[in-house]
Amino acid sequence: MHTRQSEFERIRTVLAEADGDEPLSAREIVQLLEDHDIEIDSPHRVATVLGRHAEAGEVEVIRSQPYRYRVQTSDASG
Image (tube, rainbow, N blue to C red; front, top):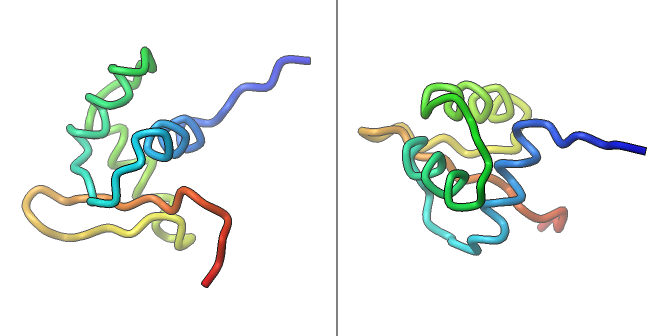
């Protein structure tokens, strides 16, 4: 059976593999995705996907210039 990961899951997986603790800009995330041969339309698309998940608490948005994102990459709570 074929299972397709959502854009958010692909982003989260790549960020978990990168094992960085620092928040990243959408442009930096796009570069990481490209380094892993994952194509996504643009930094704007990354920001849109992550912004939607921020509403659910899965992403921290740091409102600096440019905005930076920290994605929860583990299921551990606490």
